[in-house]
Image (cartoon, rainbow, N blue to C red; front, side, top):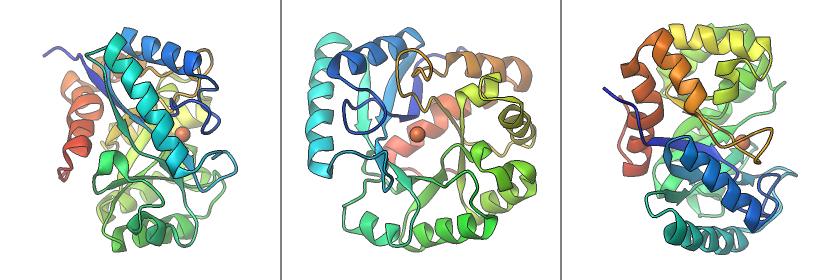
Length: 244
Ligand SMILES: [Fe+2]
């Protein structure tokens, strides 16, 4: 089984709407890097609900369409979808329901992030609120939440609640420090991960590629698992199919 054509579900590639791509040229270069790393589908996830979010929903859609047009002309095999990385705060469920905040590729899945020092009770209640609104929450870079990294049993509890877990590619390869690496290792061993994504922001330090991480997972945990995290599960998000 060969693994080609990854889907990256977390990437700040839309230009000038957050702390990701800072120009159309940089966004185009990010597309080149993603393509070179065998990514063929990207869900663009600009920040929402934090000071890093710099544009309204209307502007995000306009810039997304511009990038989509360029990508279709230059990389016809690359598909782009629109989502958002939702910083959790009270009222997010309502904002999702009225379309002020975007779900992932217009599906039931919503990518939700918490502050690194948030308490477990806040994380659990926030994700439950998103579920109560009818969405299927994906916890963004779970390994960066300090309370969860210190006790992986919390993450197992969230998975049993129906929460999906996304980890960052650089945490898998050790480029985000030993704490993130140690947490992702435990999560991968216990098969508590649903997605590996780039959380790409630029063309140098936080590049939009998951290839290295997926090869690492494939060699240590098997191709089938690697395929699930980079192709199968992300495909279900785009198709709006429930992941068992
Ligand atoms: Fe992000």
